[in-house]
Length: 322
Image 1 (cartoon, rainbow, N blue to C red):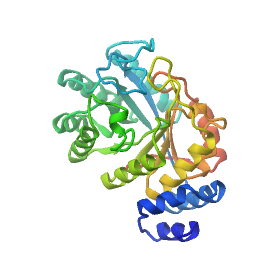
Image 2 (cartoon, helix red, strand yellow):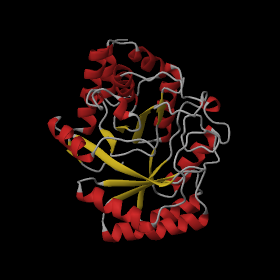
Image 3 (cartoon, helix red, strand yellow):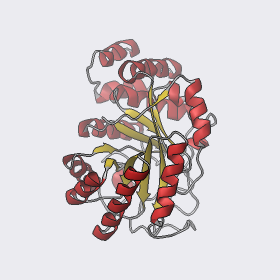
């Protein structure tokens, strides 16, 4: 087993094993990242999937996720509000589209939207698709297959639902719903004909094995859009004292993820602004997607700056909807 032999294995279309992924994790960083970027170019060429999000409903979440500023179980002082007015969500979609963003995601707090809220969002999404034309993704929680079908009919192309961490580690992160609940919702969305964006957060106290096991779960589920978040330890959450990961940690993670998920859009998401280079190193280590603009409760990086960086790195911003 060598880095070169495993690179060749992936380039030939074969899957690496858990033990091989663990071996890769311990390889010299620069060589590992270079090999991962070669795999990225082979399978994904210069495509880069850039999206933006809006916090469509904030706070008061019934779930006890230990990392989350919006959980009612945590005391973070986050601004709370119900679903934003339709015009505010529509206006931001229009602004993002004018800036050159091709995918716009509406994210809401809570375990899941009600049927009434889902119907309202369906009406709004139809309006966004008709008046703006931007591709729409939603993150509305653990919805039913029927709700997902309504969203698809309204014009949604992708649903977001993070696994967050490995199945083994999930009870250390949240106990008000389960890893199996996440998987069930993902499968319901796929059955409804939607593509799915799913990944997790690094820096929750997980082991290297947990990071790899989550990627293997995503591979088993057929996920082709994988957000890799870095924990921003928010005061008032149980993880407020967790140590921040480094730029090198994140480069190593995305590089190994590229070996496990060679055709995926590996997407830098929350916490990217904490990196000293704002993600540049990861974009040459296997990552080929990002969330631009502000995150849900924290500031992000402007679309203009991201587009400038991607042009410099030779990427082409495009939708990747596998």
